Image (tube, rainbow, N blue to C red; front, side, top):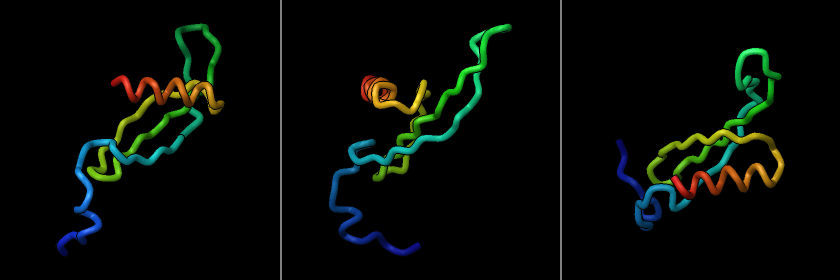
Length: 76
């Protein structure tokens, strides 16, 4: 394997200091038997330094749902 460039090694390797964000879905979920089927989305946080992945469930695609998901990610 080739050696990494200086730009790649220049920043500290703190997990999730720089991250990418992506949504996947919708996934149809049900809270229990006989309940209505709801659309849920998977919010994928990817660390650019370590390539770590963190998944959070998003209840929708609106800004409020994203901010809730981001707050849950920052707390965990």
